[in-house]
Length: 171
Image 1 (cartoon, one colour):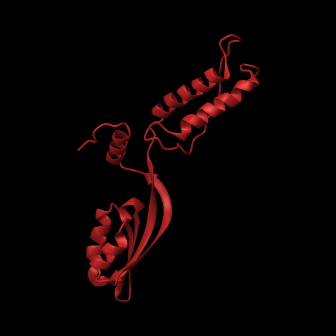
Image 2: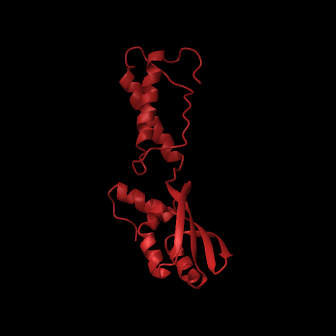
Image 3: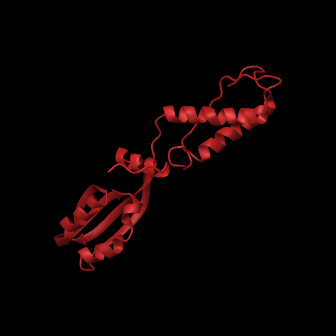
């Protein structure tokens, strides 16, 4: 959105490269930043001191300033899990889903079986088929499909940031 010739046109790609480089490894935990829009509204150049490197570094610095002020959130994938278990094991299975930070969104009956639908982070579902077999004497089954990305809780975000920055996690 720059008006006029406030910046020589050859510096604009350098600034774009700087923003992309900074967004590719966000300073929160080092992962790429998504859902981002950058609008350049004002810039000044000097015929002696201006260079492509100077504009690239200025873009990186501007990104880091705005990134911190925007209060970024860490997102994690969420899976929609549908479980079909005998009704007698419904409470045990629902409790296990809750322990795995799942949110039960529906609980229906299909004959002698309970059909539980939940949203669960996939990281918490590792080894779930073995656990489900153990809880249901081999009679339970489940399917899992991607639903969305959602923000992690504040305590998880703090722990991830501290781990990334090399500090001791908060207990």
